[in-house]
Figure 1 (cartoon, one colour):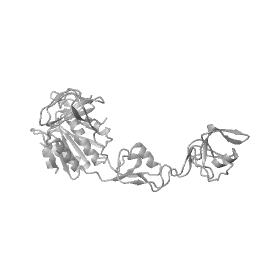
Figure 2 (figure 1 turned 45 degrees about the vertical axis):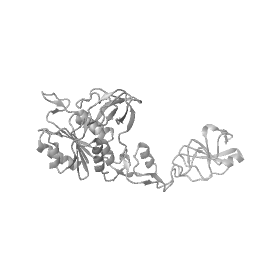
Figure 3 (figure 1 turned 90 degrees about the vertical axis):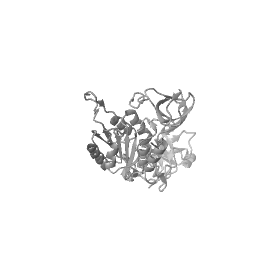
Figure 4 (figure 1 turned 135 degrees about the horizontal axis):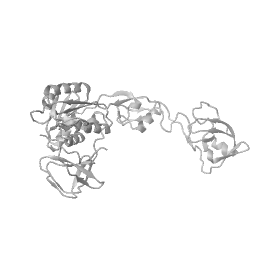
Length: 394
């Protein structure tokens, strides 16, 4: 067995970013840019009104006070007329400000007397209510750096200067292989000795929370030939394969042999931890293969602690699980020699381990918002002792 720290380092060293590809901007949400993006034009591309009102020359207004209204400009109008100093033009939000005008007064701050515009705005300054050309970004300037995660705001920002495709690190394609002949699908009746299969539901939901939806689910009986064939098929289509169950050393645990038969290089098999001691990690070319334990709590713990960091390295999102060091809310004991990940509740000040910590139980996990990590050398912790917690990503 290897330590938790050693296992995480091995996974990190073998998680190589996916090859960048160009995708449509509207499909790039949540992905990381694979190249710097520079603006191709000034934004706004012209002096632009930020309100509905009247455009005028500030100096002309100071000289004449009353201004003659001369036409109007709506958003999208292509007129390039020059406004005379004693004139004003009706203008609407988003419209181009004509040459000769350098200020805009809101329509609520004017009156019209005998067809002439009178401005009643003591706070109005030259340049008021006008968005200068290039005030957002100028042509040739760096818009977003490589590695930027494309949030909704970033998508809109790029669309605003005409970008329709971006080079990104794609989201990984994932296969889930559930093993075990004792498993029955929810919604169907159980026979004696069967249990309902929940791991594929758990992992699919966890992947969806990360914005990963290109997921294929396979189910394999406890048969080496069948499992090997399914694993070979998954490797043809996936960047990451997650197997659940069949990774221990029982007579019906075939994952280790199937992985070997498929040409996967074993990087490690067992970790000094609870839950999830019999966890496997291997690689084939740059593909990652995780053999997760079969017990539901073990599956989810290993996913949060090991799979998420690998997925984020593949896609260069690199956010990871947030860690905090906080006081313990209630004393706990554990065996030495194993790092324990305890399902816990963090109330903003302290973290408390929940009940039902056994690896087959998800009831406490359904209530938990963190994992409390207790180092392998530690046996007892008292209330108030400082502990590291990993906040769950929801």
